[in-house]
Image (cartoon, rainbow, N blue to C red; front, side, top):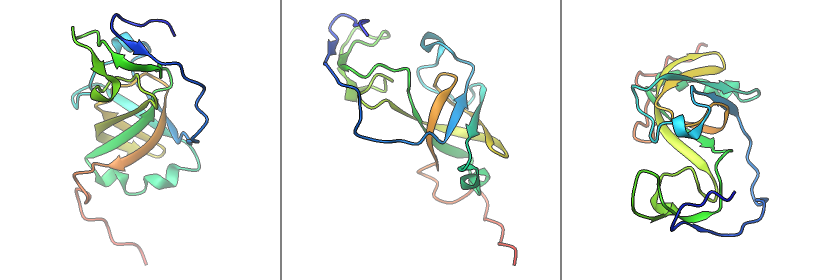
Length: 157
């Protein structure tokens, strides 16, 4: 990766081998090129689909009770070697940890999205900001809403 903008600083890195993650699904969005992808997801953005892989589908039980979910994903096409960046939308330079850029040592993306619907192993959401085919790491209810929007139905006896 040699596309370094003026004032950016790259560090030499080795292939990461110190963590093992399980991709639990795949994200489907309208964007196949980073230049077309929104900088921040918007709740009124296009509907996107999240496909959950087996054996993780049963982990969705109850997710439909939430309006918003936090989505963590692996930015598999992002470079990982910049410590200082010169964002294309700014004349200033910033340290990587002062930005929400996908370029990071461990390219984990996170977004708080609106949950539109759940159909089996597929979630439909709005508010994503990642490329089509992005690997899914995890889903969580909105961290500010610790209770579902409606009381859970009592378990059948």
